[in-house]
Length: 62
Image (cartoon, rainbow, N blue to C red):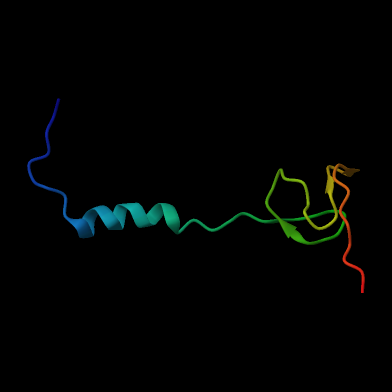
């Protein structure tokens, strides 16, 4: 198996690892309540997924 000729520096390895962290979240608009949510997830605000109520969400009363 091939071996590296020199040790990878902390700076070089950290520069490579930071690229994974820079990716931003993809957010889509919920078609029911129009809040931004992650794709393919049940909306935590209204409880709907693909036009159907999946989870009963309690609203905070005043």
